[in-house]
Length: 407
Image (tube, rainbow, N blue to C red; front, side, top):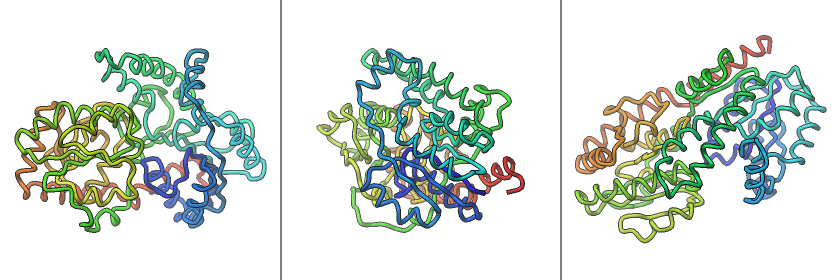
């Protein structure tokens, strides 16, 4: 089949969640014999970095500079538009023109939209190639994500502007994401929980679950290049992302002090790009370190005594947990943080939702190296068995066969 992927960022280098997922799916589709084209956003330097890796599985890759979307633009759309922010976030006249040119030059069997932001180009697709099958690959059920953020923060007076924003976006996303679900030919969810949310949103529309995955080998290789101490607690992710910011603050404020009462040397490492201004005060705290962007997360994973996932809002599944498990780390997560993963509490990870219970589970693991090792081994076995791309890609290929049986 001839397949066109529309993405908001290049799949290579595959560092962040979205690029890791798209890279894995595209590599799998190419290995199955499909001919892939890519249209994505990237500045010229990033495009040149991405090209060599993309050439291994993309017959054609085209890049458009990301649109400049200022805070004033977002405020204007919030006040004067009924569209959700995600519908406007990656709209670009240049991207539209390049997409129209691609659709005029090539007849695609299938067009795959990676993330809701790229659904803003559905009208162009339907106008230029109305018979092409279209897949919406959702990184999250975005309407449900905003709902969860609103519910988590609505009783926090200091977060009132964010609460109002999430309430407005939740309502707008319900309309937009429902429209997208009714326009595309197939919806792909990353978890059963997200699939259920889509079925409630758009009853009768076809939904398949294609989980997030990873190549376990790079994470499984031992890496002793970094020493963070015997009681290092590591949390990774984009630190401008609201659920990650909330998680880091909640852990630092409510959980870490309880841990340090029992294990004074415990240190919380917040590892990820673009730390939000709300995290700045944590830099002055004993027992907290914020790294900012790092070129490779693997040394931090292997240096962690316990990998923590204190998420209280969100949807989808967390690639960070798969990475930590593949590295053989003991993981403590909230129930929501581990949502969508087929991981049994007490076997492959430990779950805790209150600050006291989260602290208790972390302290128990810090004091028991054997339990840490057992949990790490079980997690690594689970990821290798269920979340390797070689296991997951066949689910995507089955969707392709359903949509284009003769391809």
